[in-house]
Length: 181
Length: 181
DNA sequence: ACCCTTTGTGCAACTAGTTGCACAATCGCC
DNA sequence: GGCGATTGTGCAACTAGTTGCACAAAGGGT
Image (cartoon, rainbow over all chains, first blue to last red; front, side, top):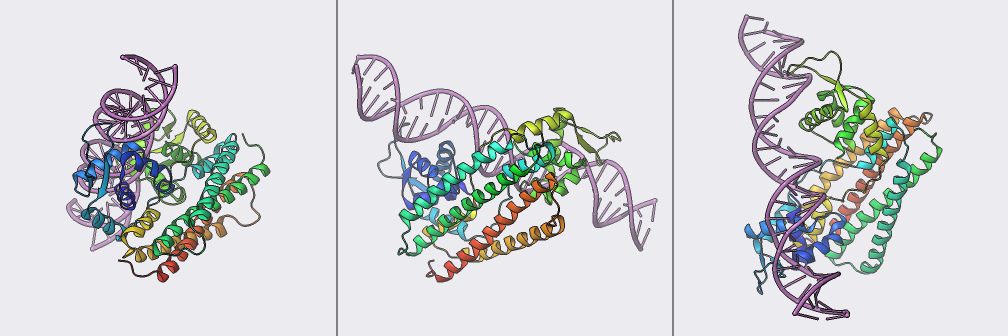
């Protein structure tokens, strides 16, 4: 049950229309919570029905007509409740590790190329994060919200650093492996 | 579409019944792919219907009667195909990071306790992995499958190391923060 | 005036994963 | 020999996320 809360957070940061939200999910928010525009529209409908958000004044009713939403007090309260409630981490699921384990049984043929591709993707992502860090978090900034946002970005950077490191190591291991087929 | 392949891998490592699979998913496999017994039984049924696995000889038909499965050649082929096929990483989703971002907007009240709890969980997990590493991967072992399995375990260890480190850092940041409510 | 692209909203159907429950066999024990 | 715990299999209903498509409005070019 996290998508509605992701949307509430985004709308609190800035009231937006469905498409604007979609774009923001493709960028910053999507770094740790992704969603398609279909999901977002559906969820906006629900949130409005529940009275947690509402459309901004200049409300055109028509389809294909821009419609912006803002968060109501009830929405903010719900978000605060959710943020502070204890939650268990959701179960791990990582396809790549699963494939590696499968490769131990059926052979590593073909896997190396995809590892290389993943490495590139993670390197690119890491570079992007570091760019953002340089741009948005110069060493002097330290308002509380900035510190929190920076913390989140650090998690992203450290995670990508882990993946690039691990994948690099995995590839050198692969090079040393006999060609199991 | 990874659960069937996780099951195929597990069955290739050792033919098992539904409940045995469930236990193994709770342990080693569950470290990067988790599933409930209900999911597993359902999937076993599908895999059998598709001709990728079959029940072992001493087949009791009755309910509440143990039933073991083994992988058929078609199943092994499918697993090999899947392992080597290129796949995009699935979208990131991390609730804790999302909550932190929400906290930047609605305040950090209550979050700290849960961060502490998560830290403990990750520390415990890390200790468990390190235990396994010491037990199962003494420095001399290096058959190809062992190297691959070790690689997977290293990923687990490094990930947990990242999380404990990051959470520790997050908690010191929290301590320095004014009490936003 | 017409068409094509972009922007924007949305429904429907499907796949994957979760939760809650039911029920059969077996084993130990009192 | 009946009773409760454990082992084992499974269905049904639900929630979350994905994929494929439809359609309306606005702007730009020719």
